[in-house]
Image 1 (cartoon, rainbow, N blue to C red):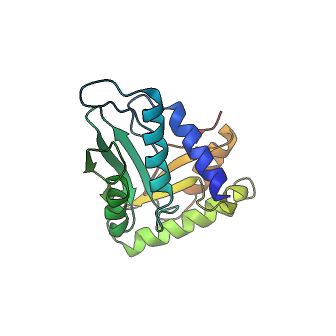
Image 2: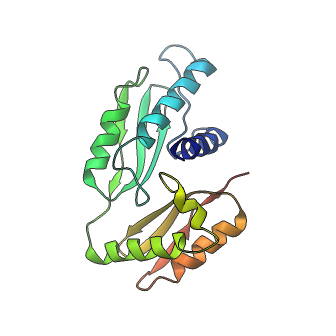
Length: 188
């Protein structure tokens, strides 16, 4: 299941790779004096993706993304529920061959008992739904639930447009949620 999730994330990242922030699976990079060849770009893409998805505490309540600039700088983006995951992500990526510098812009979400309750309730609402429950069987479920001060953002990938809509409806049904932003991508 973990391999399947990695393949899905890699495939989604490769489809979006034109200099946009990406889920653990994207970038474009060049050497300092000359353009980087496609095989080097692919190697760095795979290595950054691999390092991020294998972080031991990376889970459904975290969202990691990155961008690689032509000067070899990897910019880490996203939100994490545990502060240690921010430094773990930076340490994992900075040792990759070809990465010159890491700009860690990962946001550590504030600790809040109310947000923790919303995270769990949203998880149950989404992954307890019969349409969406198969997604919960994966090592790292592909629908990530980011909660910041009562505002829920859904990140990740689903197979069908209907799954995206069901996930949003389930998140909106959770008590004490102020708003839901649905950034789920439909796998095509």
